[in-house]
Amino acid sequence: MTRKTVLTNLFWRFAERCGAQGVSFVVQLVLARLLMPEDYGTVAIVAVIINILSVFVDSGLGNALIQKKDADDVDFSTVFYTNVLFCLVLYGLLFATAPLVSAFYREPQLTALIRVLGLTLVISGVKNVQQAYVSRNMLFKRFFFATLGGTLGAALIGIGMALAGLGVWALVAQQTFNITMDTLILWLSVKWRPTRAFSLERLQGLFSYGWKFVVSGLLDTVYTDLRQMIIGKMYSAGDLAFYNRGEKFPQFIIQNVNNSIDSVLLPTMSAEQSNVERVRAMTRRSIKTSVYIMAPLMVGLAVTAPVFIRLLLTEKWLPCVPYLRIFCITYLFYPIHSANLNAIKAMGRSDLFLKLEIQKKIIGMVLLLSSMWFGVMAMAYSMLVSCAAGQLINSWPNRRLLGYSYRSQIADILPSVILALAMGVPVLAVPFAGWNGLFTLTVQILLGGVIYIGGSALLRLEPFMYLLETAKQLLHRKRAADADAQA
Image (tube, rainbow, N blue to C red; front, side, top):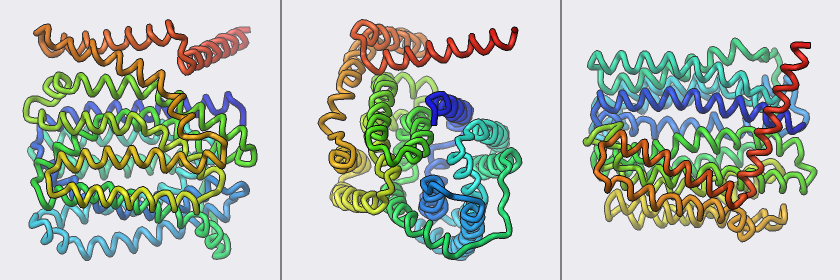
């Protein structure tokens, strides 16, 4: 797989995430002004349940299709029929048990919300194999049009329903329409269709690799969403809304930057799985580049948080600022997690992947159960500690598999992190000048950008020079292509 192919697909994946998340970001700002925090808290309770069940759809077999070297139409068709049937069964169980969940949380409206939002499970079952086909064949341009189309349509519906005073149903309709249109456009734009083929033997082979990712994903999702379930039960919908909103903004950056790299990296690594040197080089490049981009964004968001939230979401959302800062620190180091796990998956070590998840979740559960009695903020800090422990656990096997230790990884990212922290100090001081909110935020962003980019150039940071050289090469190729077209 050539560097040009990887960079082209990375461009389209990044464009897709930026376009979709950019529209979604604007919509969320509008809806946050129109709706109350309690509306978001109610939907978050439903989302926890859907997220847990979605693990069975989104993990395992899709990863197995991407990782398998000789996957063909029989494999894809087998997984397609299995996914759709399983999702129908899951939705039936969810529909039947919705009243029990509603009674547990003492929220009567949850029954209808769960039954409507639960339809996304069935839609995901149809979409999942198409996604795996796109990822395996590096057709990420198709994701761009599918995701953007669904997001734009959902934006109009969500805002329209919020303006009509439909409250929480605006959020439900937005999410349901988004995934429906996304799936429909992807289905129409990708040529693959299931054939009349089903192989139990192929399914068993794929499942023998993929089930470990299902269990790993289930552990991770239950652990992550268990915090929200506990907050929703022990505290208030408002507390849950502030916790979630504090996570959303750092998560927005993660989905645009690191997940774009992540989604292209797995199939690329899988194609090179027999070449350890190549996989190590890609893992190292991913960590260094991702952290270089993520560090200033996370530090910048953390130091501008009060001005940012007050300006964009109004005063009623200011209680989310401490949570936002905690999640910024947590997600800053997320590239270490994802790059190491991608290397392990690409090498076919799903058994090792599962062992790591079990170790991390044991530590995380102990921290969660110990902290939940001391308030939502204590639970957020426990997640930060758990994430730090997870970094070490995820990176440990690659010391042996790839010859790339955690110490080496920290040494690779340290210059970027130090420069980002140095940038954050003067940016944090800007609000003391007493300017209005918009001008203050503008000055903070410009000042931070000048310090970080200028410092990178002055110090000739390796990831900065790599990105600069890559940009020059892409520009040169574009000019050459334009010249050939004119000739």
